[in-house]
Length: 109
Image (cartoon, rainbow, N blue to C red):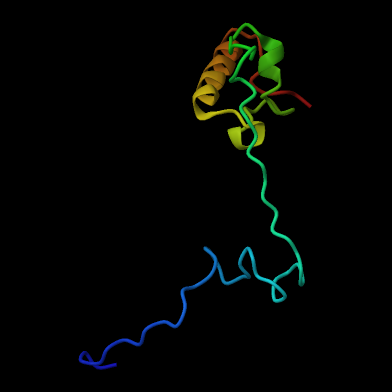
């Protein structure tokens, strides 16, 4: 193209975000076939918020154990559905409990 020619306009915007695969609601051409419904996941509520929810405390080893993997790692909030504010408090409590040897740093197999 020379510098005086206008660039041709796109006919339609691209679908999808990354890659060149089928979009979320691609009908018959998509990987699900025709008539496949789009799955919308319901947002889970935080188990540590709300009425009569347990408070995060480093001494409550039973509560903290629910948010640790079998290897001893802190589970992410996208798995446990804990809010960001409670996740920070939870990780701080787990680290304090590890420091006082109430929780293990690594689970030996």
